[in-house]
Length: 262
Image (tube, rainbow, N blue to C red; front, side):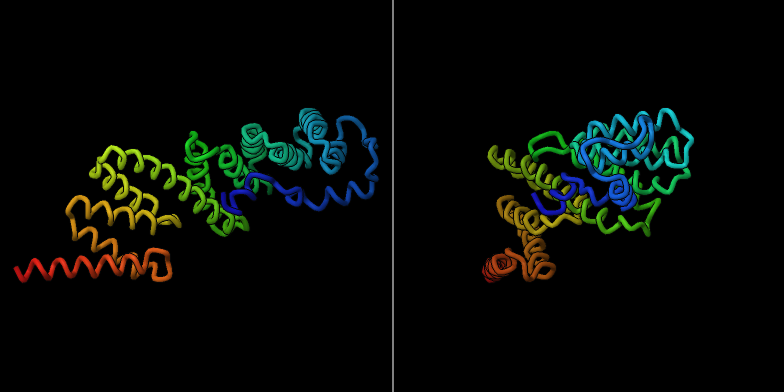
């Protein structure tokens, strides 16, 4: 699992606005919460203390009692982020949806839309498991990039989209292994062709091209094999397959020359 994906799996508390740290400092960070029951500050205090369950309960109490207060949207966002910290990603996603629905004019809508996508992505397990969350995250991040193309979150969105693409490719390559074991080379070729079209932004494309070229040779399709080898040499000259692809390409050229002589 790559670094950016791991970052998504653990939500840093630094995402919580600096205001919370200031409030915690002013209130004192003792074990007891000095703020009144039902207040926004009470939820903030618990969140800063790492008492996530208590924070969620306090924030929920505040939101239900003060749904139109100026800090209600901020409390809703903090509630969602606290669920993220707890690893309760489905619940976090719901909280971010509620924020966007109940507080559509809040400055937190953009952040909530982004974090909702992260919540979907964080629900994805290993490659052999269901990756429905990855599909949902992809659609969500596409929506986000259309609505907020200049967002501060866009660099992360781009990285997450690349992660999702790699995840999709790995999943499809598991299918390829099965087809190859069954010697269904045409099915292998079709699956690899689909990957090349649908997941062109994946970092695993060189692997897919190499597999496609080798499969083409098994299917006695030298033109496709040559095309894949040429792309590996020209598009990924520093990649792990460049030298092997160049050698395979020369071999194909020699075979073609021999056929022409005959």
